[in-house]
Image (cartoon, rainbow over all chains, first blue to last red; front, side, top):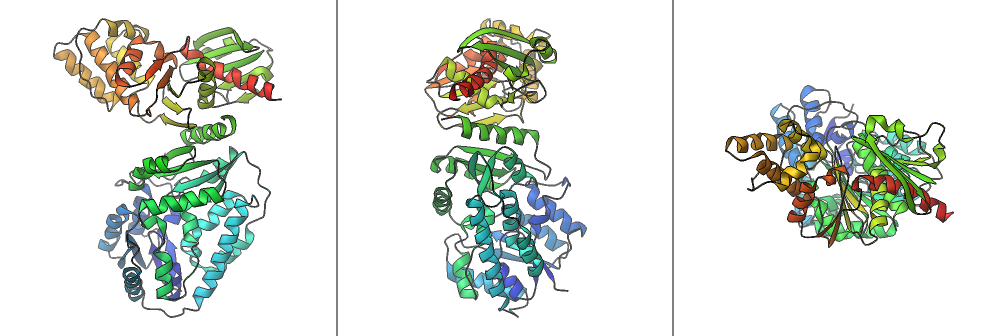
Length: 313
Length: 237
């Protein structure tokens, strides 16, 4: 059995697999949890932290993305380390410095015991190509957004098992999607497990999931090319670059409106006014806290947004 | 005839419309909404809105946001921003960008906040406006939390201010809380039953740098908007 490496945000899964380990994005278990952490700011990190400390989340080591994404993860990751879990801190460069990022990949590789099988990267690239195709399929109204989201969100760890993940991709059906409006979902992914289904119920076809789309970044077969690819991870860079990237996607995907999901006590919430200033679309901002089925308050907002996009000139 | 039925958290409102004109309207407490509908009345004519929109007979149910937008435009086609102060939440709708925000996590800035204050003074909530007009001094009240605002209000009474002065201060605090949600605009329309309190209208007027409009029967705007939704659908067929 391969060692399981927990990751707290996007860490090139190509490298983890190449080092002979099995990545597990600890966030992916959070929406299915019903816990209410006693000590928390953001529930995403607090839930996985408690699950690691209690042993409910069975990982051998942890890689904390401590620079370029989540600030709470830095503290909660240290709590895991203090409990005895081997922990490594991984930093994205804010200025896109590929030399710096290459050194980060080298340090990560050392922590993981070194590259054993870089041939596996080709297979990951093939699976990611399928992810791109799936994303395109829903943009062309040939796949349900909820199905596509559940696959794309798993591209951060490829479910820890490439064979099982390939079967998951195989199982996603083609569908003729009917909807009233096309929307983009930006920000961190919703902590509500049924968010996409609820949006679909109101006629909203989510044709862009910002962060999961970032997970299927293609390209990179060695440390140099992986460094070049992952320094473009827009979530870790300046907001201006991220806005340009989002603007481009919104245009290409012909969206009618934008939903900005924010997480209670997450610093990304502060980006809302920047998006409102720079994205020329109707924007709905919603906020979640604990992982639970979508609340009535959220449903009212989604329903009203769908109506506004459909009814108002 | 088209019927707009708005059953909110506190009151139920009905508007009958025929060829673009309001021919009947009525308001009752929410739990008595059945009195607004005749037995055997054709459900197919009712467009419902409000908290209970899906629980009452209806042909179509629409959210309060859409209903408010249509109702406000009926009164003023140039309206830019709507502030809908309800019993349990406050909604701010920017008609220029089709965006809205809802405050439903904090009682400050909702009708519930004023009911809490009226209950403390043991006076009817609809007398708050008269009290406001009789104030002689401005009292500073914390504007961040309904519960702490009430305890602060008690401290001001202990400090010698009159009930009227304190109510004036509460209305100012209420308006400042709402103002945080409102984008810059030339024209802002206030709707909802709470707007019948003239103290609230005065306070919002003082806090916002916009022209404030209050339609006739501000509590009926959402029911009107619901009826208009049907009119709009009929005319597009």
